[in-house]
Length: 287
Image 1 (cartoon, rainbow, N blue to C red):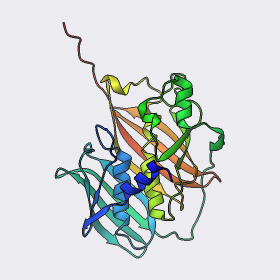
Image 2 (cartoon, helix red, strand yellow; image 1 turned 180 degrees about the horizontal axis):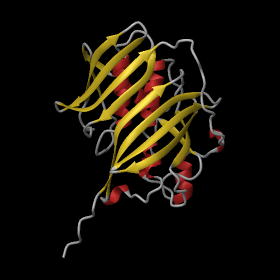
Image 3 (tube, rainbow, N blue to C red; image 1 turned 60 degrees about the horizontal axis):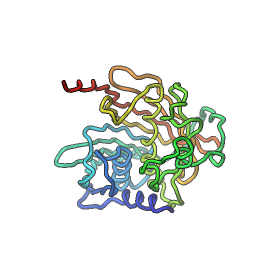
Image 4 (cartoon, rainbow, N blue to C red; image 1 turned 45 degrees about the vertical axis):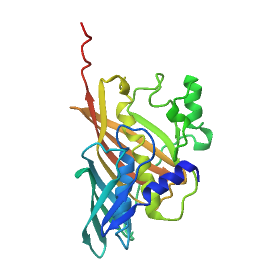
């Protein structure tokens, strides 16, 4: 397990401070706001810690306010329902006395029933694709400090990088993702790591058709909601094909859909995210 993945596991090991109340910490890095995937993954972990049977099969969530990366997050779990087949939990993430995120998650034990799925796209295997660091270094020659760090999730983009000037402008993107090391055999932990990773690339499909520069003050982007459906047991430390697309962007919002397939073609997770795509008029030059 890499140090970065080990620290992610530490982030997901929430501190229980009261019945149904947990506290999560942040990585020690400079960010303007908390990474949304971290809040979603910690919320799912808080919900799962209160469930005695079944595995998570779906979550539906909203990002309400930017998270403060300098302050721990409290996660309050509401045990809405413990049924014979389904268990439902609601989680509210709180900072400075205000809700920054809420999630409703459902847990279920698999049953024998009808079965079908779509076919996984035919793509090059992850072992044939260079690491993200090597790709960035090969394209630009210079590697930004962020790409030089260790990261808990290994990303192998198929085709051009989503921010490359030479990329196609179609709103589709595919990449392989995997935790950078071997994780313990805990299904909840694997689901939480996948939840963390799912927010790393989904928004890129919305921006791919557009010439957007995040750092010039003319664009504001953020995740608004995030929904996931876990179809099969999965391991986050094995390669997963992340097949994403954005069917529409309009009215200051863009929609993205994603599917995670195992290497043997089994559809593991489906997800949908809507993001804020606000264009900001640049300030007039003085004089």
